[in-house]
Length: 179
Ligand SMILES: Cc1cc2nc3c(=O)[nH]c(=O)nc-3n(C[C@H](O)[C@H](O)[C@H](O)COP(=O)(O)O)c2cc1C
Image: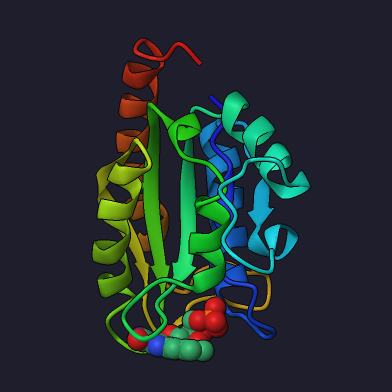
């Protein structure tokens, strides 16, 4: 299974990168093939659904190989970063039949719960299938030590449960896909 991790913010000083790198390590450990897909490499001037840009072509190659995605995104004003949406909007039906797991990051106690709820209908419109489990990285400044290991040892178990659900749907959806 190839399940890349999308890091959803290009902000300078982004703390979500720590959460994305942790998810990358956990996903590899779980046995999925994966890599980090950084929205910084998909920045475009304006929404572009022509599918002709270099960015769209690169993303299309990644999507074609993929069985699903994990998105790690901060919550910005109760929504998702604009650059994440612009990147996702580069493609449309190409995403068909991919499972998606959502991970949200915030500096405060709520862990980005609102961005997860905002993203779910977007995923559905993009023909993807969001799973029920999500990972909420609340108080991100206090979540990881200097080696990017979580202070809360229950986090690894919660991520395992999240990846178990992702795995079930990735396998089931593979059967349904022509692409
Ligand atoms: C434009 C902007 C809007 C934000 N809005 C929210 C918000 O609605 N809810 C929240 O919990 N944190 C919000 N934050 C703070 C983020 O939780 C914080 O920056 C955290 O470190 C995750 O984002 P990062 O990856 O950009 O660092 C916002 C931050 C920015 C830059």
